[in-house]
Image 1 (cartoon, rainbow, N blue to C red):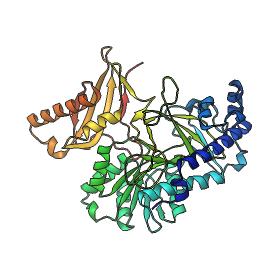
Image 2 (image 1 turned 45 degrees about the horizontal axis):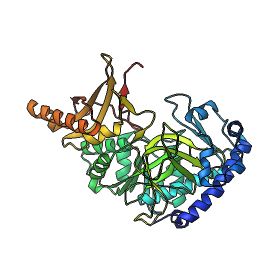
Image 3 (image 1 turned 180 degrees about the vertical axis):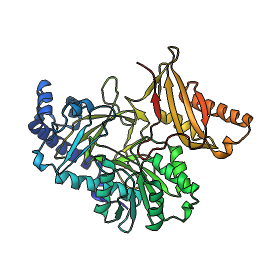
Image 4 (image 1 turned 90 degrees about the horizontal axis):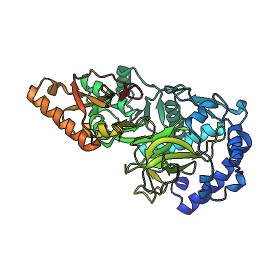
Length: 432
C-alpha cells in the first residue's frame, strides 16, 4: 500500500517541475523573512530571482549546525512567534541545542510524511503502534504520533524506558508495530528472552527503527529475535524530525520524500555536488516548511542517492543506509573508520551479543582502538582456547573491514551499558 500515490509515484519530470517551483518559493520566503539568509544572500550578491533551475541551488550558501546554534533560540524562524504552535530541539550534547519551530501547516506536513513512512512499515488503520521513541523536545515520539493519527491507527505513547512495562503492554495490548531506536529494540528482545517471553507468540509484525546508525547485520538480529520486519527510518530535527525518508518493504534504500525535501550529495572537502550514485555528505533543503525554512543544511551524514522506479512502485529517489558521519567519523592512524564498519564485522560472528563499545586512546603518541564485545553466556563459560579463537576471529574480521589491527576484549554478558535511546558506541579518550 502507498499512502499518497500521486506524490510518491510521480514522474521524474513532474517531480523536477514541482521542486523548482517550491525551491524558488522557499528561497524567496527565507530571503524576505529570515535575517540570517537575507544577510548571507546579500553577502554573496544573490537574489531569489537568480534561482531559475534546480542546478542553481549550488549558488546558495550552506547552512551548518553552528549557524542554527548561533541563531538560538528563535533567530531562524520565518514567521512571527505567535504562529509557531510547537517547538523541538536537538539534545545539545555537543553544544547549544538547535531549535526547530512548527506552524500548524508544518505539523500537518509532518503528519503527512510520517503517514507515508509508517504505511511503508505496514501500518494500517487497525494497527496498534507501540511508540517507544522519547516524547518531549526530542522529535521521535511526536513524529510517529502525528503520522499514526493521520493513518487512524492506535498509538500507544509509552515513550522510552521502563522495559518490563513495555513488554507487558506489548503482550496485553497486542501491539503490532514497534517504533524505537534499533539498540533499544535489541534490548527489548534480550529482556523478553530472559523473562521467557516467546516473541513468536506476540502480535508484532514490524518495527520502524531509526535515530542512530545500524547495519544489515543488526537488521537480521532484530528480525530474528523479535519475529518482525525491521525497517529503517531517517530524519533530523533541523529539517523536520523523523519522516524525511523511509525504507519500503523492498529494503534496498530509503525513499526521500523529495516533494518536500530536496537532497544533494556533496564532497565534504571540495563542497561540490557529486553525481547520482556516488557516496558523500547528504545536504537537504526544506521545500515546503513555513515556520523554519532551511536552505542546504549540511547533515554530515554519509550516504549516496539512487534514482529509478522501485519494485514497490514508488519513484522517489532512494538514499543508501547511513554508514557514518563526516564529523564524528574516527580518524585512526590516518585511516577513516566508521563505527558501523566495526559493527558489521562483529555481527557476522556467531556467539556474540550485539552489544559493543569502541574505546580510542593514544597511549604513546599512536592511536589505539579497543573493542569491548559482550559474549553470550555459553561462550563466556567456554574453554579458554575457544575464547582465544573467537578473539582472533573478531580481530581478523575487523581488520578485513577497516584495514587496522584492534585490541579485542571479550566482556561478561550484560556488562556493557544499555541505552533506552541512542546507544553510546564510541568513547574517544584522545586528548587533541
